[in-house]
Length: 172
Image (cartoon, rainbow, N blue to C red; front, side, top):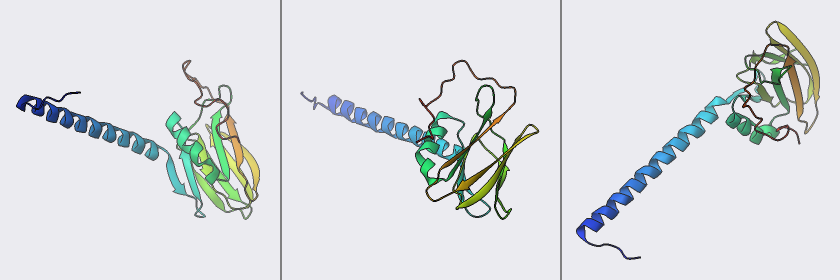
């Protein structure tokens, strides 16, 4: 390949390098903003007992972010509509330990709540639209428990909707 070293050719080459640097910078900024929005869409917090937790999972990107970190948490809780399986947000969840202390009591930002509970027995209560459901779980060393709460609510799922995973993303 020959290079044009004439004054016009050098200017053209410099302009191409400048455009390439600008395009690279724009792509990096857009990618950074996209990753930042995904990171902030999943709510990270600590429970009343100082246990780490995350809530979210509304979008495909959030589900993937949660999936990557799932082994860091001993309880995986999901809320959904009974008929369609459509995910639900704004479900009130209360987790109480065997001493009747509230470990978590809050409104979920998305359908998933991951929390790293200490060893022991927990009562879990989920409430949505006047309906309350309860379950109990025992956390043992190395456990990863799943709790599913399906509510009887009118729901609609877009005909174009497809699960981002071929099977339960949180199963082993």
